[in-house]
Image (cartoon, rainbow, N blue to C red; front, top):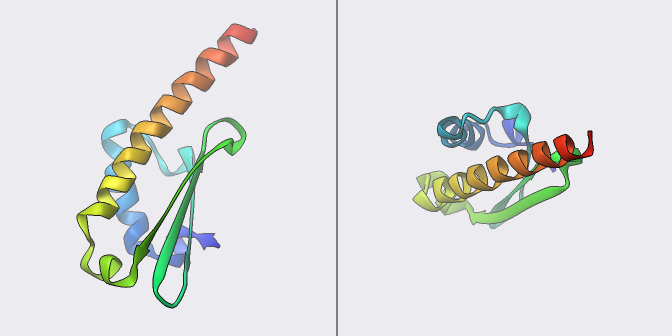
Length: 96
């Protein structure tokens, strides 16, 4: 796995576009990707100590066509990341 911004800059750009409405930034998530012969796997790690993760593979054809399912995956991840950050914040405040 390589950082997504190096493995596939176009997908990284789409990720950033989809996270923006949630007010999330590239430092809120560790995004990586790896290509195989038939598909491309994206792994997103987030939350306190990167304890949460979300992974999905897309066919090379879907990547080339910039299939809407890619954007849906990133949007879903954005929602999950925001919830995790809020949850982690309240856990931290409760422990102080």
